Every structure is written in structure tokens, then in C-alpha cells.
Length: 214
Image (tube, rainbow, N blue to C red; front, side):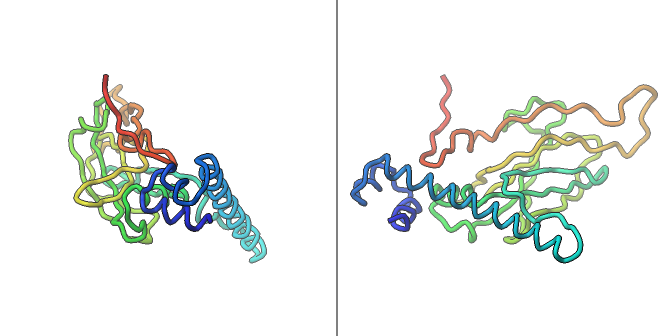
């Protein structure tokens, strides 16, 4: 029954439609979906523990490849280079694929770089944006040729049907200057906090609601 529910969910059918087709109540469908999500998270945790144990048995300690969290981070490597790494859990991947009605593994993944220097960023008022396509199996990427002394935010998302769908947003980072600072000037300007991507703001396990302004 769970396989049929997941198959119908992948077809972007509503909970009510799935319940009617499977002969279940809406509560029963939600319960099975929640149980499946909990199972996926438990398996992910067990895999991390297995990796940790195998690392110790090999006679040395190494960091795990994944931590079971949805996150994108940016690190400044120099005045003109950023290092971006990300992780997306399986429940989040399946949720996004269901919304886009596509196989997550076959969707082009990428980064969108925003220059938000001295801006209270609202998702639309960046000085400039830059799209970077990444490989299917990549979990980190170097971004070259950024400008010194600028403030940046990075979104990780999917390029599908001619549009960019952001999934995760990083914290702000500031690249250092590549010139001498005047007396009393800070080497790095303070950065403002980013906002959550509007596209993903109300994206739940069951539905996607458009944000409306009053």
C-alpha cells in the first residue's frame, strides 16, 4: 500500500485523491507518509553510524560524507574565490521531485550567486546574479572570479522548464579586499542576514502554497 501511495504522490496527486483511490482516510494516508519519512531518516542515521564505525575499524578517524541535514554553506577561499558545499536529505529530494513532476536524479542542479553588498536582500534586489551549473554527483563546488570586498549569498536549487527553483539558501559571506585598507577601516564589511527563498517558504510535505501579499 505504501508503494502505491508514494507512486501516486510522485504524480502530484493530493492527499484526498490518494485516500479516495486507495480506499483509506486522509489521516491514514498522512500517517503512512509520516512513517515512511521517519523510516528514511532512521536509515540515514544508521548509515552514518555504520560509516563512523567502519572508519574507527580501519584504524583511523575520518569525517562522514553526510550528516543527514539540509544545508548549503559558503566559505571564502580568497578575494576572488568561494567554496560552496551542500547536502540534501532524501525526504527533501523526493518532495521537490514530486512538486516538479520529474526524477530528481535527472534534473539539472546548480547554484545561483547573488551580490548583495550593502543591500537588505529580499530575493529580487541583488546588484547582480550568476548561475553556475554543477555535476550530478557533486556535493561541493569552487566559484571563481567573484569580486573582492563584496557580500554574497548562494542558493542551491534546480533548473527546470527554463526557471530556477531555489531549495536552500546560505548565510552571507564577505570576500576580503585585495588592496590595503585605509587607517581605521575594517578589513571586512559587516554583512546583513539573508532571507529565506520565497519559492520554498511554504513548501510542506503535502502541498505548496503561493505566497500572497495583503
